Image (tube, rainbow, N blue to C red; front, side, top):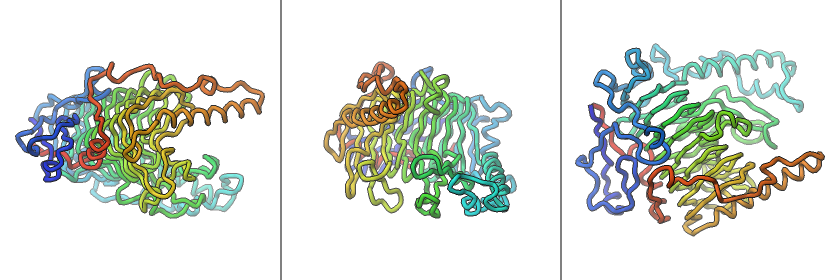
Length: 485
């Protein structure tokens, strides 16, 4: 049964006519008339852009019979549809109509923090840290609080983690369908399409504090809005990722004088995830947005994989990891990045402005091709240092990107970042009488060893105004209409 999809017609689209989306592909020619139902598309179309078109392509549940087509409006219905009559990996199309609550119990009750670990108190948990770190003997309740935090975390994981099997198309109906308090997990799965949904990042009530993580200590929340682990051929299109009703800035103050961080990533991809395209989506008001790669020592799973395209998205108020890459051959194409120094919900402070915010993170053995991205960072002291940060990366190339509407030399910023981290690593090795790491002696290069145009067809947008307009007006859920059968 075909899905009814068309680009939502609006007077703004008709008047400006800067860009238009059909089947997930950005067209830069102005439409003569606004899109209508006559422009209807099939919901079973395959990914049309990026790495997800490789390795046989990505079409999710295309070809699913009527009995494997579902409309769901709560968690129980979703779980039943994912089982697909006992054949979870067979092609299926699932329409989400409304909001799925990950905290919804089998009886329909919405569970709260106290239901997962009665008696746990985050302030008591924090009071058990001393200048030497955690101690069960600091107070008589410290041992029980430590165990309660872990119990609560495990119970929350069992409740909110929802695994999407292979050969699935997951579609949001209308403008306001999606997930809250849910960790969508793509684990050793393949051929998955996710479109027109809003993901409100889950709140980790049992986030852990590590006073030795960084100079100021750090929170380590456990749950992403979406996680991909050893999965492949994934197309995420017209999706909105956000902290929504629970921004970190509204949380209580932690030991480092900053709000407690109850969120992890928006969409993290690890452990050999491969052949992914993330297109026309919005990532907003979040700290750690998109981590690609598990760690510098994970060459056995990640080297030669993590082939990912991030194209035509809007990253708005994302403080870091948009994306942050290790190992991957990643194409960052025509995305719009925006942030404010004094934003009331998600303030961004670049390194030159005394903070740690950045948009694109260059990690160990990463091979990023950045192309035609528009960066707008405003406020007192806002500067180009927000664009890239370097952690042991020796290869990166950018072409045609802009900062506040003007061409900018992102390659020079990346090279300067390498020089700084390399000098630090060499000096540290010298002080110990040790040999400097190979990456620190390799030098920086804009030869990343691969070209997107050799892997798939695409056309880059060469206008700052068009990239910005598309990012602001044509990304996220609610831009395309999807009607349930």
